[in-house]
Amino acid sequence: CLASAVLPGVGSTSEAAEKGTAVHAFLQACLESSRDEALEAVPREWRELCEAIPVDKLPARDPKAYGAEMLLAWDIRANRFFSFSEDVRATLDLSGTFTGRADVVAVAPAQRMVYIGDYKTGRGRIARAADNWQLKALALCAARVYGAERAQFEIVWVREGEDPFIDSAEVGPTGLDEIEAELRARFDEIREARETGQVALKMGDWCGYCPAISNCPAQIRLVNALASDPAAVMAEAMT
Image (cartoon, rainbow, N blue to C red; front, side, top):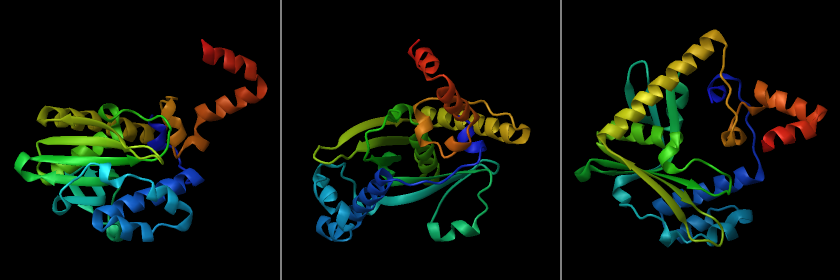
């Protein structure tokens, strides 16, 4: 939905978000040091949770060929793909630029392939890897930055007391070109919506993760309808 890129966003946090942040930081530290050292840095309230994660069952990558928490970008106007660090973000002009943070990026030069790993800790519904535009955009950026012809991208579900569940997808040269063409079309739609003020709203599972949800006309109409006639709204939802 274009609203997430056009309407004003509101930052928020929750216990679930704080848990996810702690787990991500732990998993990143595991990539860079030992598991025991990583556990020592985990806040006390999340240490038991992280200790239960079977790190040895997560996808293994060559430590010399990966980066954790990598920021990737695509300047659409200049058609320039690049990576950057958080400490220089404030010095960059990122207007008209897609930016995203990849939990893990691994590079296999011999196979001309990049790998993107995205850790998830909750139980909310999200798109499968093959249909996940966050992952596809990150895979495109990583492939272009490192000159790769193929990209593998995975969602790695990490939940307390359970073995990791991995949902994986892979694309080749044609697939990467198709992702780029689709993203260009979406960016053109976003630019037009910003210029005209006309935003096509589309409600779905993704609304729960949208930073603009509190300013979304469709959500506001839904709240008003629920307040005035909840039975009618529920009946319509069932049809």
